[in-house]
Image 1: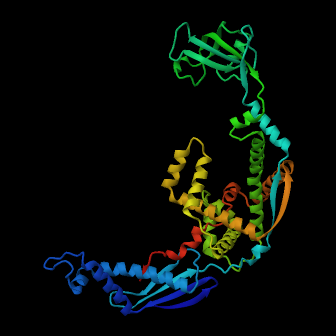
Image 2: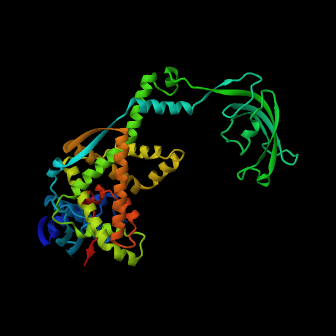
Length: 476
């Protein structure tokens, strides 16, 4: 194989590949030997069909298969040996080909620009840890305790009041007639929460254990018996027990009921929980700070085909006129996004960052946990949509790169209070809103929401895998 590289313009290159007739014939002979044992032709024993007969019968099909294999192998090898990383899919143009002929073709390719990533180690960013005041953990534990009230049985003559737990049996009628589901046993209501029927609770205020009380209430819109919706029902209630709320004691026993070893352990767990709530948001600020610094890096040239592809993505859902008016602004967004993606990809390549199947599955499980009650639907979605899984792989890959950058770059470590964290996050949100508003005023009718939603740089799969694929051969 002979390879010649010609620079056309900037990042555009023509790579001429020449494979001599003798090499092509050897590929053909190998293929004939491979199929000989499986061919059954009348008058010949299996495996004994002469090559000339095979050529007459299957020559075109064999050549087509061999040509595809040679093109795939030689084009990939030609690009790799010349250290050319394609930005998008290369195009192949066949000049000479055929049985018992030399193969000559041209790979037209736009090369990824050379990217310098040494400066990444000089990036400065803020890295936050939130110091949680013990009072914050105590307050959170107190709130938990308030939402888990204990009740103790009241004395026989005690009248029920708001906040008490009333346990009762009931039978209900509408227009003196019973209906399906008109009975309830050991029904429990905390008076004042109004969780049963509107206005029901208040009518039980003042009842005592052993009382019978008739309560009237309108059946709701979602009542199963549709012909009874919005009709007034009478509930004859037999009061079984009244319980008074009892203040929950915050002690080791309380902590153990929540899964902690003791109260001190619960306080530590709650402090960590509060810290994590802020850490995720603050980590995003650090990541955005790093990405903004990377945007300042210089890249000699951005491949036009990548810009066009990204602009198409940004323009999705827009009519032709809006897309035209927005093109200039979208090109600027696309250039920044692609530049950041190229730099991150190069940094990932140089540091041999990979995403394992285990890491990918962990991310899938994370996405599933974020949708409680819809786990099966989310799992089915990822099983049926390989592109969605590929997108997750890109997310994990990018996160691993950012984490490594954080290790190598210069972090400004800051320990802040919960109040300071809230202030920083609020100011960041206000700044983002101003930026969005400013961008939306640059060009009329630009769907800012759509542009902002795709803030992450191009995924590795888009760029990294492209050398392995080629557009359909142009057989001239």
